[in-house]
Image 1: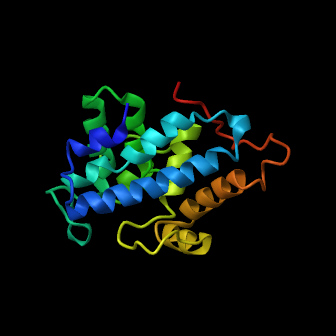
Image 2 (image 1 turned 135 degrees about the horizontal axis):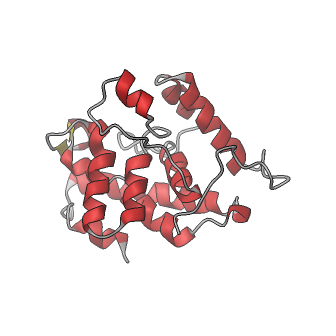
Length: 197
């Protein structure tokens, strides 16, 4: 399966939104593959990670985000659930869950209730190692700024705006993926990881 062929069904060649999305998706995919190499003991599926990283933002075409040339009717926070619906229509159910679960560090039911978000009331946090890697690497690349990868401090500051626990979750992932917790290969987060397979 070539994920770029699926994107091409929704994003016309040469359009500004298409260029923004593909640039972002390639950067996320490259970093996600590099991160996966740091945790071989967790047995991440690199083929799936590449495909899911390319497709994780497929739903933005349906949202209203003029700064990145999205002209759809939906609030941007819905791009994950809309992407899930698109990929489920292609039979890509595991990839679809990456779409839904990559927003921020994942959206909880409490987030949805407390912030009155226009989302289905269900947990949307990463579960598998593959989902977590895509969610983590996505945070380093802005679609509104093509200057390259953001540093850790900038990412943490952005996430802290949505609650300190979001920044703490991200920092836990960062430590796991950068050998600060990998030395003994036993420091898997308490919730554990399953794979999508």
